[in-house]
Each structure stands twice: as structure tokens, then as C-alpha cells.
Length: 491
Length: 138
Image 1 (cartoon, rainbow over the protein chains, first blue to last red):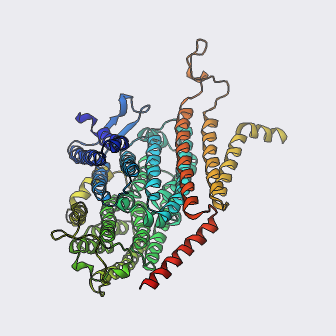
Image 2: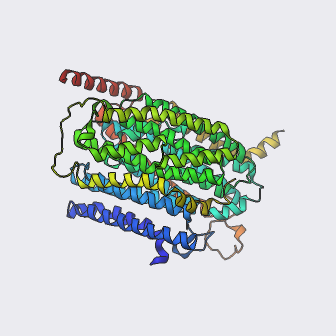
Image 3: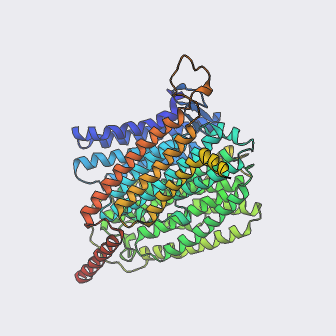
């Protein structure tokens, strides 16, 4: 049982997702309980797996006992294990949260649960796989379920989903092409095996061609600056209940895959690595400025958060571009922190929308009186986005900056500071609206004497609040766990 | 001169054709105004990648990968793996096309058009109408 841990974590949500349409036919709520329990079980297992990895080292799991270069391998190192736990926490809370927004028709409800389950499966699979083609399959599972979930968000959501589908398929096709080129040179699909063969250094030009395809593919999937066109409308118009999962986690996992290709398959000895890192660095700097400036121009809070995601993804790829172990650890810390910040901010907007039915920030005047918890998370997450201690955002930016200083890349630090200041402009505007502006006198749609919101919305908000501060305060512990893998991988 | 070109084409020509097919697909997605045509171009692009895998999986003088009495070494068989991978890719492409067609169906239902510029115009009109109504209510 325990030796099958890595695959169980992926299989539990998959089974629940596949069963959910059938179970909904029997009883409306049955599939809800099954999916929630499956994700909860998978969350517990992933925490236990993190403990195992930290104490005993990397887990290699061969699916079906086919030996490694031929069969599919799941590799769980300390990096994967941490990201898996973050994905599981956000997924579990999203499953609870989404029930408040669900469509009322029976079939659609079952289908939506199945799609959430499949999205979770795809994300978990992409994180833990050690096989490049398996990564493609999980990438497509993630994308297809995400297209459908975005399309469930009303008539604008359908158009956004269609546009995302066209661009996302270009990305998947380019990924396949890059993998095909690598496969034709090396004859293997296993990541570790591929690294051994490529490190002989005879395939440098082939690797450059495939790398350009792979960079574009992952760039589109993670919404890196010039490839972000699909992202704002898709994030803003997705199904409101599942937005935290889509915005918080879905763009981080391709970033992890990109890191795997850069540092764990190509390796730092690759001839064109320096050139590649400079290009990624320039793109992320441009993205950080562009995203922040465009976020300042928006009125709809969903659009503000979507454009700020373009900037935040820039921080993560900037960490990859700097490339020292500390900067890489900073990038991953930011990945985890940002999953909670952006997820949390979308939990907040969902909560406000649930209570008042609005998402225009001009209507948010003094809602802190009615929704203290929600506004507390809104404030902490906004401060963390700007980077004020002791929140998660400060420490990830700190590690990124110290990594850049180690490499004498002062321009990166300048852009980092500039982008943080721009963040401050629009997040303080949001805080001002919530606390100071005159109340717009909105009508409450949901009322209760005891709680400000239903329990399933309160729980995610509290968990995100704790997680943002927790990641900030215990950052040294997390960085230590990350460095177990990153030491020796970076420049 | 002619012989070098023809040997080059015999060895590598198929890859050039595949590349042209791929670029046609990508260009079509960017240039076409009609969403249905974009979907077709997306399919063309996917087929180009499938061709690419099948081409490098090919081997002169190799036979199908089923155990035969007169062929004993691995070099006498073609590699079945690219074909296996492409079966998966075809299934994925079928799924994507299905999702794409159903999304198109919904777009047509909600906006009454699948031309991109018409759609943008109608979205903007809808937004304007909504704002005007909100203004009246206030």
C-alpha cells in the first residue's frame, strides 16, 4: 500500500471524477461527498509522502513494474512533494468552495464535479511524472478540463474558452514537436535517461531547436509575457467556483515542467543555456512591468488579478533565469506563496460576489464591516503581493533578489523593485476601496446571524490566510527542503 | 546539381513538406476570421506533427513490428513506439476537436455568429446596452 503512494495520490481524484456522473444519477449529493473525500484522502497521503521524501530521500515509482527506461516512471523529489501538497490543499478547498456556485441542473452539476476532479488529476500527474510523453498526456487532461470549466462561466466564458483552446492546442502541439525532436535524437522518453544521453554534448543544435519549441509551449501554458494573450479573459470569465484552482495552480505547474526541462534534462552544461536564460530573463522583466501597468488600468477586480498574474509569473520565470540555487528556491517559494495569494484573492472575490453579486471595485466601499474575515485575507494577500514582511511575498522576492545579487545581475533587482512598487499602486487602491471609500449600499443576497458567509467559503479563506503568513514565517524550513533537490541543479 | 537536390529531397523532402503543413496550420489560426476555419487549421497543425513522428519512425527495409521467422534482429523491424505515441496524440486531437466543436455550437447559440469581428462587435454592443440599462436603473 505504502509503496504505491505516488500513484494512489493521482488515482483517487481520477476515480472520483470518473464515478461522479454516475453517482449524480443516483443521488444529487453523493458525487459531492465522494469527490471531497477522495481529494481529502489524497491530501493526507501527499502530506505523508512529503514526510517520507524529507526523511528518506527521493521516491522512484515504476508504474506497472516495467523497468525504467521503457516504462513510465513517477519521480517524487522534495520539490515535487511540496508542490503536490500545495496543489492538494488548493484543490480540496476549491472542491468545497465550488459547491456554493454550482449550476442547479443535475447533469451539469455531475459533469462539473467530474471536470474539477480531472483538472486536479492532470495537475497532480504533471507534477509527479518522470516521463516526457506522460507529461503531454497529463497536460492535455488538464487543458481539456480547464477549457470546459472556463466555458461554464457564461457567454463570455465560452468565447474565452474557445480562444484559450486554440492557443492551448498550439502549445500542446509545439510541446509534442519538441519532444519528438528530442526522442528522434536520443531514443528515450524517460527524463533521467534523456539527461544522461544529452549530457554527452553531441546533440547541442538539435537541443536548441527543440528547446525553442518547448519554451514557446510552456510559455503559452504558463502565460509568460508575450504569450499571455489568452489569459486575462480566461481567468476573468471562468466558472466562479473553480477560479481559485484555475488561477492559483494551473499556470504554476507548466512552470515546474519548464524548470524540469531547463535544469533537469538540459542541464547547466548545455552550450546555449546562457543565451536561453538571458532571453527568459528579458521576457520576464517585460512581463513584470507590462502586467502591473495593465492591472492598474482595470476596473473589474477579476481583470486586475488576471493581469497581475502575468506579472507574478514573471517573478517565477525570473528565478529560473537567474539560475542560482537560492534564486530557484525563491522562485519555487513564490510559486507556492502565489498559489495561496492568488487563490485566496479569488476566494475573496468569489465570496463578495456570493454575498453581493458584484465584482466592480467601485462598489466595494466599506464592506469590511460586513465581511471582516474576507477583507482580512484580501489585505494580507494584497500586502503579500506587494512584498511586505512577514508575508510569503516578501521572502520569495528577498531570495530572488539575493540570488540576482550573487550573480551581479543588478538590472533584475531594479525591475523587481519597480514592479513591486507598481503592485503597491493598484493593491493599495483596492485596500482603499474596501476600508475607506463610502459604502455603496449593496443589497445582501445571503444573510445569517452567526457567520458572515457559509462555512465552506469561510474555511478556504481562513486556510489561505494562515498559509500566506505560515509560508512567510517558516520560509527557512521550506527553503531547506527545496534546497535538498536544488543544490547541485542550479548554476 | 540535379542529383544532389533529388537525393536531398528523397532523404529530407518529407520533413520540409511537414514543416510547410505545420506553418500553414499556425498561419491559418492567426489569419482566418472564421472560428470554424481556425478549428480546421488547428487540426491541420496536429496532423503535421503526427506526420513528423511517423516519418522519423520509418526505416528503409524494416518490416512491421510483429515477430516473424525470417527477421531476427532489431534492425529488421521498424520502431513501433512513435506509432504508439501517435495513437495517443490522435485520441487527444479527437477530444480537442470535440470540445472545440461543442464550444462553437454554444458561441453560435449565444451570439448568433462565428465570425471573429462580428462577435467582437456584438460583445461590445451587449456591454454598452448593459451599461446603459444600469445607468437608467441608477
